[in-house]
Image (tube, rainbow, N blue to C red; front, side):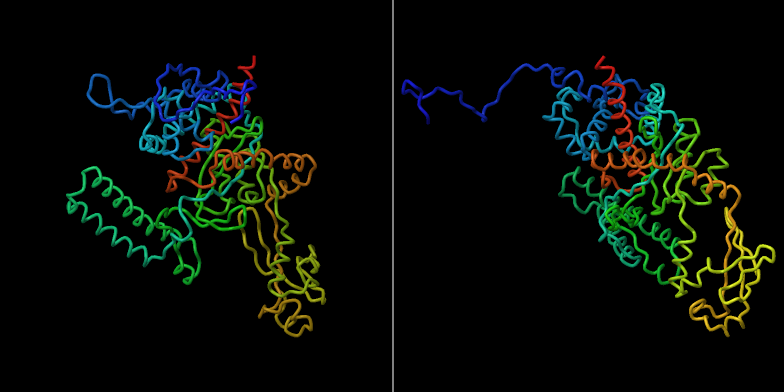
Length: 496
């Protein structure tokens, strides 16, 4: 110990961490006036929460424990998600010491079961709250619907890849689960406390329900596969049967859900959110526009999407809805060339090497042989015209191994003719104005996806099942919108 100049030891304040103290506390001073938790409480308090209150059974004048105010429960979850917390147990623990949570609860602790149940028990009320918040943001000119960017992101399900089982294993697990439920319902564990018995019974029933759902989902998976061998290999997860294996952004594969998010370009507000079991985005655009219309009672003037959504079906659908679609479209020539390479066709004999004669409606091959018109196939947004060579010409041709090595009856050429609306769309996307608009897509459409995963931490759902995962996605998007309101409106007002 160092000595004072006079040669005496310094007198220091001791720290005693084993004592209990009592001191007065002003809860309002726990957080500053511009703390975001105050903004969350304020905005939620402005909403009509009648749908949440309808489900409260505790009423004045009747015995029973009082219920937590839905305004508090909503605010807790919004604040927790904005802080990157998605676990009900962690939220309950933070109520004990974190100033923001203490300010919300008035220094009380909310049980994690109560928090967990609240998050999933008010689906319709939560959707209505999401719409109400959009109404507030629209009234403050943060939503215009002039230009909406849409994108999808794969979020991992609350299941691991090693939980996927085939039908035989699922049925075996189901039989065991039914036996367990039967044993518990017969009360053969009377030495255990009543609460423990009820908890075990509930867990056993939930497991049985998941396994029964797994068999149902197995049939859906089989219906989407082709070939008897693939159908026999169909598997689903026994912990989250509705999850599907999807490719992740890092190139790996994992049980996931496909979350679809529509973002208004004016201020980056999410105006629509949905969830899908489909790994492909091509069939999701129509539903996305429906959700935006349902949430805002307006149709977007313009939708900007990437190539995954730019199909002929979607081009025609958006035209019928009077929505201006902006999106990239793949090069059909390159795609056709790749298919011919796989068939062993020499590049010198790809389709573009054949000469089309519109007067005679025929094709001429590089060897000078004529392919005559055979038939046509009408698809959505496109018509395919097929031209066939004379089989005898191909069999005697010295270039057969380069032109049609796998075709027994000779070479066939397909000429695709797009619907006039599709042709107009392709021409539009070649203009500088359309290209400039498309470049605006990524910063707007992909930001909410990145924010939800990095800021909120929702890289994997905490809840199981399609319906509950959709609710968690809705909580995350609601949090995103409220955070945008805090940044663009509430803080500006506080600064003035």
